[in-house]
Image (cartoon, rainbow, N blue to C red; front, side):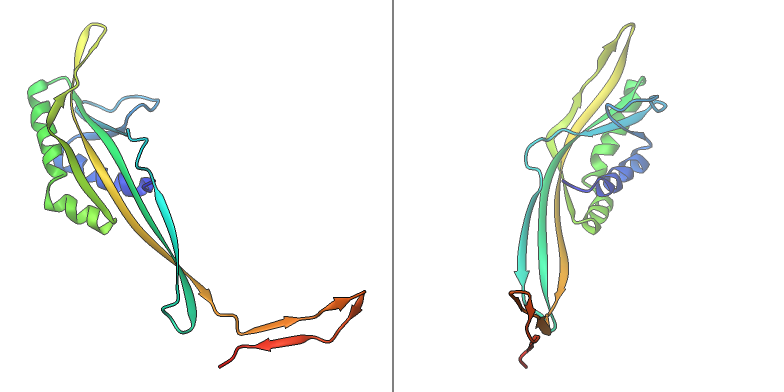
Length: 177
């Protein structure tokens, strides 16, 4: 999975660009003030993949490199009661994900952002006595991460054998140079 802190960093930029308050969808508590943008991860496929690779590129240690790839689809929905204002804000939000500013932020987080679909969708709901205007679109985040852990060389091994409760002399194996 993509770390939540990285997803939040990408999403926070759209709130500033579009003037929308942000809210994670399907959570308890009060809704933010209109207009706002709710988002949630909707993909259950293409989750994370990890591959450990042992590399010996260094003289004094070996490194274990872990490569991570994860693709997640996020659904973003702009919500308001003023439909005209909502169309403008939803358009700004969608455009932000295609902007250089978004590319700059996402590149620093090892994420590529892809806007899915060709247009903004009308997701308006009827709530008891009024309509709640909703416009939305989906994006896919592709995360590529590498983590390297160093493993230091073993320079000396000491073995003290015990046979039939008799301690033998210590065997010392030194690193060959």
